[in-house]
Each structure stands twice: as C-alpha cells, then as structure tokens.
Image 1 (cartoon, rainbow, N blue to C red):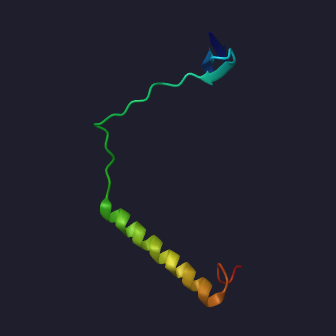
Image 2 (image 1 turned 90 degrees about the horizontal axis):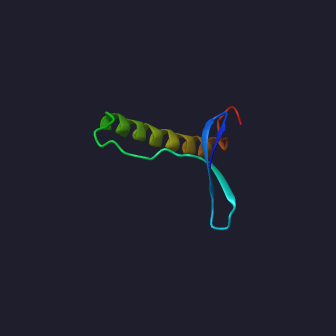
Image 3 (image 1 turned 90 degrees about the vertical axis):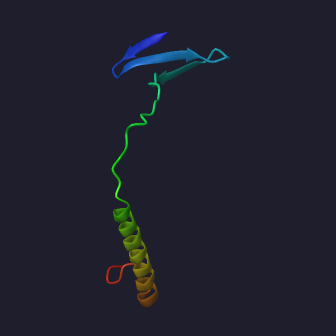
Length: 73
C-alpha cells in the first residue's frame, strides 16, 4: 500500500504481527568507484601538527595559570 503525503511517496508495510510500519521508501545505495576526492597529504600533516601544538599550548596555559582561557575564565 502506498500513501502520498506532502513530502512524497511513503511505503506502508506490515510486520509479522500485523503492525503497520510507516517509513519513507529509501533509495538503493551504490558506490561509484571512479569518484575520487583530490587530497593533499601535506596539508593534512600540517593541520594535525598545528592541532597538537594548540592542544599542548592549552594544557600548558592551564598548568601555568590555572584558568581554562587565561584572562577570560
């Protein structure tokens, strides 16, 4: 049984106990093996290193001042 609402077509199914389950009909999933995203490994390495440096700096500021953000909290 199909039901039409404002958002589109909805599939109504019954389970083994006769209860109705109303879910949107999902499209079948597929993967495209030819699709690739250009990726710059050096940029990712730099981003990771700067994140680690910022984390260590935040820990150091907390140890030295006792405040999470010195001058604010």
